[in-house]
Length: 266
Length: 262
Image (tube, rainbow over all chains, first blue to last red):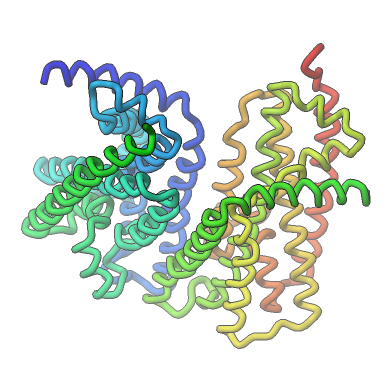
């Protein structure tokens, strides 16, 4: 265990430095920053015309989207692209030779990003919430803890989901395109397109059963004080079920995949 | 000029042939483009669960704007990104020498040499969505409206091109402008919606400072037959002015280029 911690410290530093070096993600960055602000703008236009919707007024939309911009970064996991690259090009071989599972490299790489985002964007959002009279998060010590926990489990869920789907790369070259479909559908069910409260009931009920909701709208709704204690508990339970399922899928297909991978390489 | 276009035809054919070797990818990419188009159309449906009209736009009318956004973004990925994003590399590596020594206009070659076939379906699919919006409205534009729309969408492409070229040309002085394309994309993203969806100063900026309104909203309004002719004239004028400016800026910047060997 001590060894693993030492390895992690070193890997985390590498992840952090990689992040500072690697600029291709700038595209993604700007897009995921502009999109929620554009969506917020449109909702404000709608509210100005039609009045509050399903109990959501101006300040609710502002509070939701400002936090969504931050939490979307915090819970995102782009490891599928790395897994796919490693498996397709064969650079996985090098990682297989090393004494730690390739999973750890990708995880620490992601964590480097998270630290960066927290340091850069966290204070910005906190400042916005403090300065703007429209944004008011009714936080207590317990709810703050629940928000933090749900952000962590949200990230874990994205990480394991993306890793599970990445195992397809052992068999197919179309993994990235396929995952984009999953990801695109997920953006409806996660609350990224619009707060789930504004969707028709059926979609909302489906969303509470899917993993996507727990990667974004769940922490946001806790933050905004819109969930009761039992709803929060239920949310964590569903998250746990999905997390365990994805982990099993990943490990099973990882074993099968590596066997097949070696067979091709030899 | 005829020669230059013959060159382009050869370049593009080669890119297309090498892309077509991976047939599964080719179709899979088209399928993905279609998926994101439907995604975009459905994502704005949410607003209309709650209200008939947003800022004077019905759902099918909004689809026209959304389709044009998709088409223009496709044009960006097809032509602008694969070409203009390389300028910074040309300058840094000194490979601009090869461009300058060719007997073709350097701006022409730098702007059109490459083609990004990855999203080749986007422009057509986008126009398809715009047409679908019109069909839902049971609205048939007159020939005059279609002609004006054609001119305005060409002006929109020129506008987007000129702005990108000016920004990318800054690389002659600032070596690191890799994020320019991301910036252009972020700004264009606001064109997903009609400009009247934005309030106050944001709308003013999107009309007058960064002319996103001229790229999607006004061409869509031309198609729907409700565009003020003065705005149409302004759009065409703006495109001409910016094109001349960007071209002059490119020639000016070349004077600062010292080449790889000197």
